[in-house]
Every structure is written in structure tokens, then in C-alpha cells.
Length: 126
Image (tube, rainbow, N blue to C red):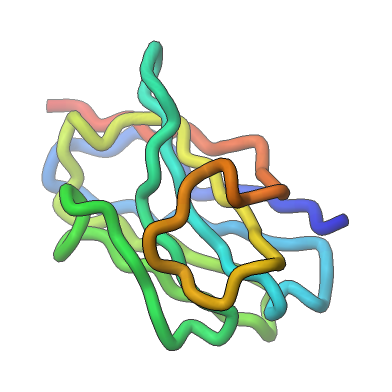
């Protein structure tokens, strides 16, 4: 069972940038589609971005397109979420998740991900 650990969260001013990392415990991490989700305080968890096993295809939630970039380095068992031009509305606990079953990463929901990290908090000051 793959274990995921997120890092890179913190406090940033609006307009600033952060890069989140999701590191897996398994060398077979390349077999997993990986997604990033976020959960603002008191709200439902929502999809942010996803990436296929070899990074050849990605998907983004509309509000982050052009600002966030998901990428992966399978040699390091790590998926990244580069977040630029952050807004107060981006503040949330960010989670990475892994899916072993699908081949395409478009249109995925949280229910399709069996493995989750503990999350990393992103706070954006206005």
C-alpha cells in the first residue's frame, strides 16, 4: 500500500507562489495516477489537478488553469504542484492522492483515489 507525504505548504501573500510536493513510499509510484485536492476550512474537498503515470497528460480545475502546474519526477517518487499568483480563495488544506486503476486522468473525482496523504496547509494573506 503506497504511503503519500505532502510538504511545501505555508503562508504566502496574495500574488505569491508555493510549490507543494507529494512523495511516495514505493518505487512503483510510476504506476499511479496522482491527483491534488484541496479542502478549505468548513467546505467540501475539491479537485485541483491530476497527472498520468508518465506525466504525458494533465487535468486542472478551471479556477487554477494558467496558475497551477502539476508535474512529476518518477525517479524521485514525487509529484509537484507549482502554484503561482495565489489568491485568498486558494487557501486550504491540500492533499495528494493516488489511483492505480485508471489510465486517463481527466474528470476524476475524489472517490476514485484509494490512497491519500495527510495534507499540507496553504494560507494566503490578502
